[in-house]
Image 1: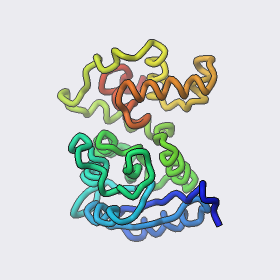
Image 2: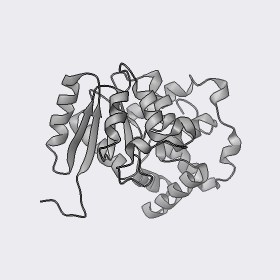
Image 3: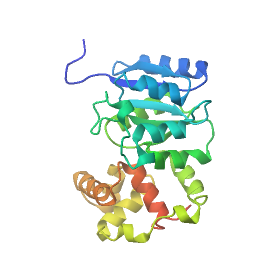
Image 4: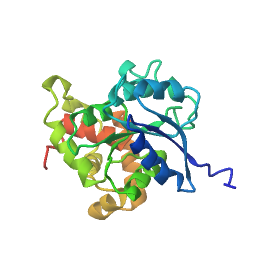
Length: 243
């Protein structure tokens, strides 16, 4: 019996391929700190089920019939409406705002939809052929409130896709005006995929200090998590592709 203060992470699997869902479900269900609470074959079905199932983390495929993962993520997180009326589908979650965290699943290293899904509210992405331990680590990471940004594949994806953003979608550098020089340094290192420990070592400060800086960066940029902050770093030109 699990301690009351340490509940299992409730996971939803959304993918139109039943064999893919079965494989993920087998790995996730083998973990004592995780449980599958629902499965869906497309975004529309997922949103219906999420309305009545408490979920912490959603593994969301990008390409699905009826409603794709991008549209479903926008609807779930409320990003399409500026968070007005959004997130209600996940009202059973115990996350800070009542909305499950979304990890986008993709078959391709450079899927043009993934950055837009992150902008729509996802907390990161995961390649479908990633090792099981990487998938499990990603679920635990976003459940803690962080984002899946450290793997080199994520950096490669952002480097590539940031060049595809239309000019009108780029953000004004003025967004960064409220950051101190040290906070800018921290944001650059976050965008390079550094963990808090690695940032602390590079800047010769305590990890607790880095956590404070990261928290301030997120607050000042009104970013939900590290991934959103990194996207802003690319959009404002603070970080350039391949830098």
